[in-house]
Length: 118
Image 1: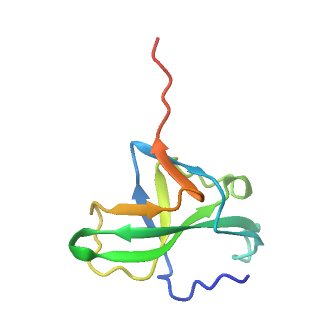
Image 2: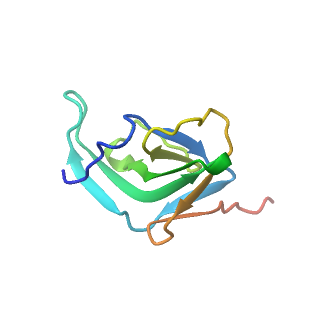
């Protein structure tokens, strides 16, 4: 559908940004009505440019992958979890602390708004 993902690992890296959350602004690219599975309904997906920065100079450039919840209602994604689509990142392990650079015109990462307690 015009977005070359061939250089990326065929899976996502899920990261928690808690206690922060994200707010979609304007996607780099949105693909609509993608029929990716023979028995599942078509879905919409958006992509946001991102760079992972890890320890000891580890860097990888790719996308935040965002399946639209309105086209996949049975898939609940927490507001503090992002899925990264990147090339293979050697040395990255579960539990590592990383930094993430994004474009604020595409996606904002900000403090969660909490309601005051009575």
